[in-house]
Amino acid sequence: MSGARHARAFGRVAVLGLCCVLVADQDADARRAGRHRARPAPASEFTGKPNPPGPMRWADTRFEPVAWGDLDGWAADDHAAAFAAFAASCRAVVAGAKGSRDTRPVYPALLETCRKARALAAPERDAARRFFEENFRPVRVGKIDDPNGFLTGYYEPVVDGSRTLTDEFKVPLYGRPRDIVHMGRKRKGESFPNNGRVVRRIARGRYVPYFDRAQIEDGALATRNLEIAYLRDANDLLFIQIQGSARIRLTDGSLLRVNYDSHNGQPYTPVGRILIERGIIPREEMSMDRIRKWMAENPEGGKELRRQNKSFVFFRTVGLPEHEEARGAQGVPLTATRSIAVDKALHVYGTPFFIGAELPIDGEASATRFRKLMIAQDTGSAIVGPARADIYFGSGETAGRIAGRVKNPARFVMLLPRALDPVEAGRAMPLPEPRPKQAPKGEPATAEMPAGLPLSVPVPLPRPRP
Image 1 (cartoon, rainbow, N blue to C red):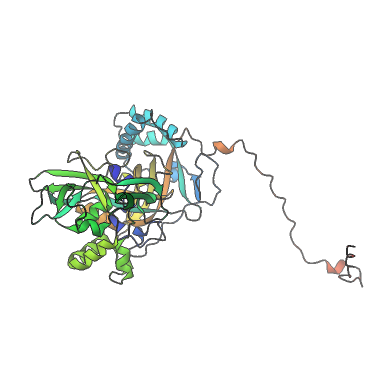
Image 2 (image 1 turned 135 degrees about the horizontal axis):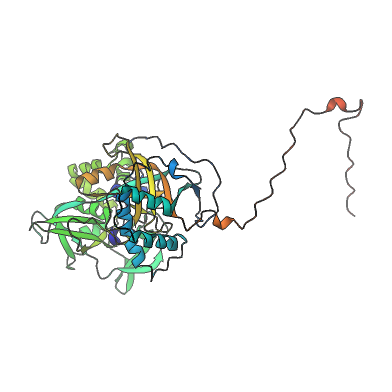
């Protein structure tokens, strides 16, 4: 979270980074390619109207203005809770306005709306609802060929650990090595973290790839004094790296908070996909719990599987109080089931989204009704597209189980500041003349042709050119 999610070295593979490899057709990132069971997509409410011209010009994307009264579940939501998360984002938006270089049209409009929000003191539910309805207009967003977006989940793990190496706690959680060099260029490929930014180290006077997971686990960094803490299980470390942050309960009773800091630049390989390809776990049964169970029951196999993923994340400590949630890429504390990670190349942090879906919150086979106003406060390099988000479910085991199950279609409605008219950009553009209607085709009028007239006559060929 914090810097964690906006640069997650695994391509921000949320909790399912390993197991959600089943939905590769739904998500560009192979990590999400997995679904427990086939679930029908929510019925599309798109009307088939053409995109209104406007300030958002995104490839393969359509926008459709809708009415507040047409949003299923809008009136029943807790708008005051959503406003609290929005207000947290607004503090960051207003504070960063002076030095911002964001040229996207949504940013200045959202800035003005945030200034209005800061003038309100924790409004009640109805007042918060009026604020959103008076200052935003709902616009349904999705791909041109698919009105449904896609949701996954993430959380903050809580694990036991120690500040010192002991017989029980032997797995080091490393801080960022000093010899990591970011080369400033990128490699194409969805398996590379941070959109493929090249990471190197210097060895014998030349740049070479940084150590991969196997080399690091075998002690490549053991003499660097980089250990922030020691964990009980290497699999715990893997899941913490996937999430990008964690709470570590130390042996002295204190709590250590860590967030993502950097990565080794090696490609990410979802271990869940490997388990499916090897026929170990059926695709329809894949989940984070199944992966963890198999790795725990097969220590040597788990080690080999873990090392198939060469990507490795480094951390930093953060001074967050115990009652505060992890921080997202926007730098504000996340709110469980109100904060989402979005594609930062498209969306501005602080943008509200009303999301509707049926999610497996109550159990593997459940389809719990989910209709909530959520705020974009985080990101991840694998979260790509206009209607793609990771829901933050909080910290701990229960949040992890829920997050590990979520990989579902959803309906995305973006709340666009009213200062932006979604059709304003097209008003000065003349509409094309309508095509003339074609006369209805009738039967050939052969009966009216003069008798004896041939239907066709020979046509002489043109003379050849001299």
